[in-house]
Image (cartoon, rainbow, N blue to C red; front, side, top):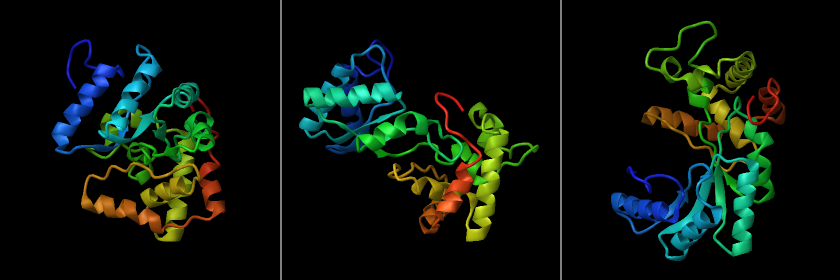
Amino acid sequence: MHDGPNGAGLSRKHILDQVEASLDRLGTDYIDLYQIHRWDDDTPIEETLAALDHLVETGRVRYIGASTMSAYQFTKALYTSDIEDYSRFTCMQPEYSAVARHEEANLLPVCEGEDVGVIPWSPLSGGFLTGKYERDADAPAGSRGEVSEHVEQKFTDANWAVLDEIRAIADDHDATAAQVSLAWLLAQDVVTAPIIGPKSSEQLQENLGALDVDLTSEEVERIAAPKTPQYPAE
């Protein structure tokens, strides 16, 4: 990352420069999955896809992915790859959790229809779904809720209702709220695997415990019931 006219965006020069820089930093010959971040209105998608295809063809990148777009933008990218015979995006990284479900009305139907893997970011909604926050109480010192406006926006009646169901189900399974929240995502057919962000080995082990939580279809529905997905905002 650097300043200047080619220091951002999805132009061919910026993509190729940044991949070479990443390979140098990682000390490797190739990247397993290379993802672009958001849509670039200033660069034709054909230029971006041609650059990514070049990286795959030359072996620097194995697979390509994308993150956070409108359904139209992602569909355009996929169909452009088909028409031009470029490498196709194999996965999408959207925001998705039990309280952030707007992509159910946007990107997820495209991913399901186009057989694209889904690796959600913020699966615990900035820590809200870990259960560490309480109604009408100050956020714990040092938590994201204390400093992040994004997390504070999660403190809605509907989201608290979702968390109430998650906590109740967690008690029934002798699990944590975080484990049930991740298990809910894994129960969605369209989801491949959530991107977790543990800060310690203990949090990592807790997150991995979600694999042992087998939710019933009724429990999955209970968690979903308080919210109706809407796009672009809930």
